[in-house]
Image (cartoon, rainbow, N blue to C red; front, side):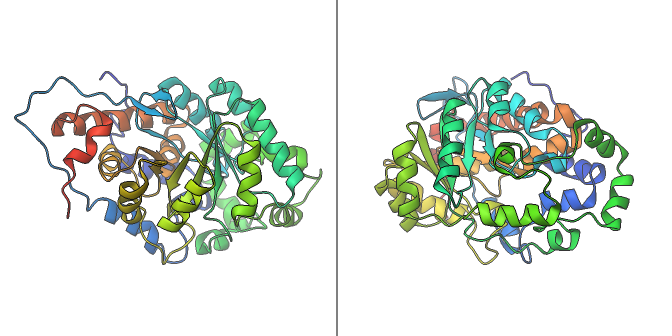
Length: 383
């Protein structure tokens, strides 16, 4: 596989360290942190890495392919870019950089409602191939209008979010003034002055804002009013009453993100959803919760023939993608890894990170003698 990667940063760990040096502390801590004491953040990665795979060295091998079919579309790898809020805060123009890279590499990019580019711009960059993640609005009118915009933008998949019934308690963000309402302290201004490249790029692209939400926001909001607007506009708690109208309205594929139990999986199937993403929001919502890999194994085994089962949260590498697929996921998504990449390398960050993950995953498949991504469960060591 001839993929170009920057040899100075041959791992996501390297990208993370570079990103930490390149962007202000408040932006890095927003990206890097979990909630409360970061217990579930670390549990996600550590328990995923307990998964072991068994190679078959002496079997005939005719080559390995990363190509994976999902919802009738063939992607060039079994991973995509997870939705991340406030991406432009971490690196200016980063959602557009990542959307373009995903399109060029033929993998899915999921746009968050609360990131810093619009549905329409993302559709333009990806020729209508980007997915859209909807934070549930409190008003039906607003919900319906956003869904109509996603449909007009030809989004093939709508993702609805169930794991944010309340905002996570994130001590770093509170200290940094990034809780709602946000504030810009003297400390944060000094951090910006210490990161001139980030500051210049931000000046060039302008202060990040919620581009998808702009048509619904009163003009001239100050920061305190913005926080109040967000609290009043969105209600993260989903139930059957809220999901049914979305299923009736949305004619494309509908995915529930944030699933962590068999009960919620069964509800998703009953309500006619096409897929679920087993996720705990990257360890940013419930510090006392399970890692994502724990419920994935049972959910995939019991329901994998009834609904498409995917996973995010905790993945940082090609081997992590392999471990997740071996544990039963049909597809995977990574969020922080791509944001580390674009924060570290700017415009080259998306291409580099995708190429790096493809290279790592290809090496794992060759090592195992795994020829197709759907064959990964055959190499799982049950512990």
